[in-house]
Length: 180
Image 1 (cartoon, rainbow, N blue to C red):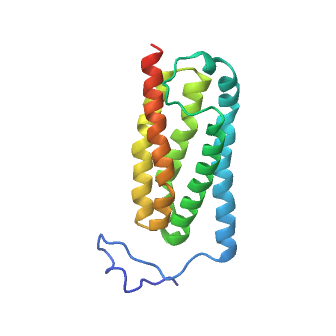
Image 2: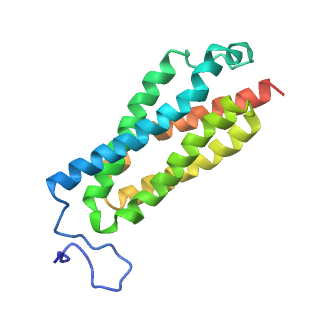
């Protein structure tokens, strides 16, 4: 039976309760593999529409001078997907008793993350991409807040992704403006 420690509060109060039992080592390893597969899978799914576009029509659209080189994007995203998975795993393992609550905002932001390349690159709809990415940033912030309630490390692991998402939002906005 899982019990609350002195770090928590009385049952029925709004403050979080710390739990003394973590998932077993095998459960933690399995969840890490699942989260890595989920995040890497999102990236691979995005590459289906991103790669052909970047090699084709994307070269011809107007972009701001501060656009990162095309070669940087796969490396940045690989690192970000790894950090996302590690952050989600850390939040989950720190609060396995409330895993659903910890992972719901994460899954929402990951869904928006996966939808963006299909709008921007797949449909060539820069406006729709911008709407999606405008939803991604608050969803990412909600994820970080939720993670921070379970693990400071989990929230900090999401900071590079937040920085990149803000950059991507500005880049998407510039592309919309430069390509009416």
